[in-house]
Length: 342
Image (cartoon, rainbow, N blue to C red; front, top):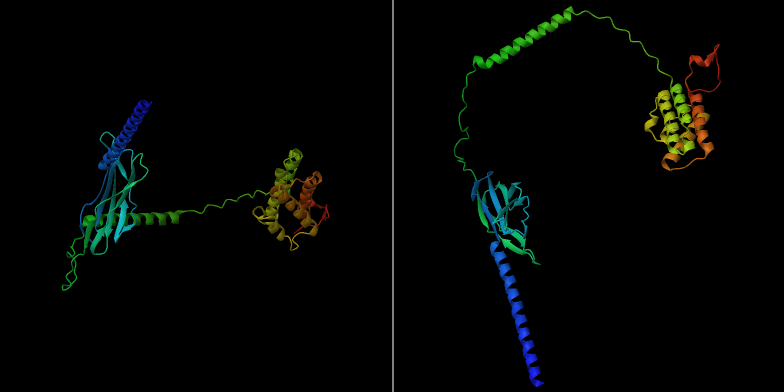
């Protein structure tokens, strides 16, 4: 029994030792893969010159190379770096290396400066996260010293032009276009004056005025059409009352020159509170507009008598406010003795 116990203990000890070696090898493998990825990752920053004059431009080139499956975050560049102004940023270009195993991202930034002196372009930080890694690594570029020089000016000397003005003679070839243009304009003016002198006045054509239909005839025809459609009987209450109210509004525009189609009902009614029409016509108009607003905006459903009464009030309002025509007279007297608005 003791011998079997010692054998089993030795067996488990060997198994534990083998497992530890396997884990250790796995860790070394991961570390080696990470070290390989780290060795393949590099970031650079470069400038095409270190000395410029005030107002001149130079380029800052940023690039990062990493495995193709890594996530690269470029540094955020503001509108200025120290006292150097950013003029333009190029798009970030992508290049594949080693059969697509590595990726290089590149961006060019155009800078300029308007203050003389030395300026430090501090290192830029790239954030790169390898695939399968829970953390991201930071990579820094080198710093640069930039000098901006002024243009030397000798203050002891008088300010003068760099070169004296050049005396260029005015030739006939240069004057020829102006001469031709002047002759053409003179000929056109002469022809215009001659045409005006010879022109004969044409007799003015008399335009026959086509009589416009009275506003009340158009409105009555529209109301008759709406009534024949039987809209509210089919459940189209909104269309019915919109048609009746719009017909009355159009009639008001043609009859009284009031832009009723563009006004709310209260504003339309306010134009008739100064005795422009009689009280009966005003009450019928108010009933039509308010009932139409209730149906259109409050989604009310009027009863049958209200629908018929709105149509009847529309006809009555037109009859009470229409303009008097020759047909309304019979032997010098009105056929209908109703009050009308003049």
